[in-house]
Amino acid sequence: MENKFNICIIGAGIAGLAIAESLSRLFENIIVIDKEKTFGQHISSRNSEVIHSGFYYPKNSLKSKLCISGNDMLYQFAKKYHIKHKKCGKLIVINKKEDESKLISISKHAIDCGLAGLKILDKDEAKSIEPKVNCYKALYIPSTGIIDSHGVMSKLESISKLQDVDFLYKTDVTSIELKDELYRIYINDSKECIISDIVINTAGLWSDAISKMVGIDSYEIEYYKGDYFKSQSIKNLNCLIYPLPKMSSLGIHTVLSLNGDVSFGPNLYKVNKIDYSIDDRFKERYIQEISNLIDVDNLELHKDFSGIRPKIKFDGFFNDFVIKNEKNNGYNNFINLIGIDSPGLTSSLAIARYVESLIN
Image 1 (cartoon, rainbow, N blue to C red):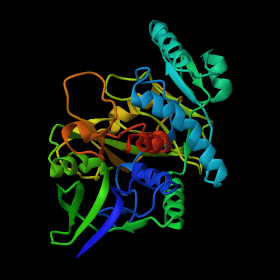
Image 2 (cartoon, rainbow, N blue to C red; image 1 turned 30 degrees about the vertical axis):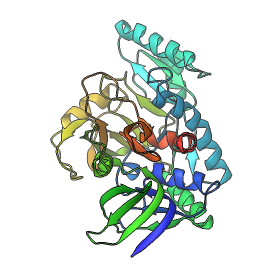
Image 3 (cartoon, rainbow, N blue to C red; image 1 turned 180 degrees about the vertical axis):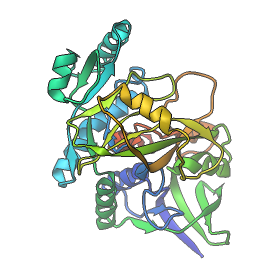
Image 4 (cartoon, helix red, strand yellow; image 1 turned 45 degrees about the vertical axis):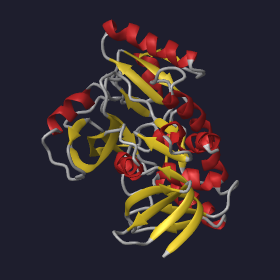
């Protein structure tokens, strides 16, 4: 059996859903395929649900540009559709005077990227925002927030369906071939296939495998896991609290829920398979890291959840998003999205707009 579509989107995480919703306003006959029973079962639902501000990344990188524009777009989307969110702001803290130059450098870079309202605060000023913060000084970023990511994804799917986008869940893509300028996407280890003019690969943790199916093997994804621990004794912090960023991640930070719960995470360590179980082996390190962020005695932590990020394997410092029409590789309108890790949630609506510009 063969079914013909104009656009086939592989992967129903938040990027795939945002692209489906956006393209449904311009194109007819779109289908979204996902191997899980519903949307957002991996990266999109296993993260800190932070609306990032976009200044951690090199200026003019895709992560920087799409996060900064996506920040405003996501707040507008949440307001329009009454999705729960909170623009709570963020404090990046330092605990010793020697790190003050690093804080100043981050502030200058953020301002250079176009952010406004930033301020370096002394200890008393920081505590006026969040009394539990532990710091020598802190950089306050007002545009950071938190959001109900499931609510965003549910609304994107709902709008897409109203625009006649088809969703095919519990469906594995097993092979792809390009024939007569059309892509044939074979599913569920059978001869059944979907034929499409355009394929958009938003398969997240499996995006490199999908790319290889069509013959593009230049990307290799590595898995990096992060654990989250919840505190029962700390609730209702006024803002997010972060340490200075590390080379490979933003560091263990506070994670705020819209109901007032507080968790901490994620750490970052390489794994070879997708496994979301967590244990207590990192708990002591968490307690040490958390003491640098907040003043708390006898901190009790309990296992919360874990997530896995896809990072493109390469020898270098910065992993940018790969969002590319592979026409120069001989696969016109096969659009790869590879290594969409943080800040993918914040960037999702801007990513969708960027993908629009890549379709020929």
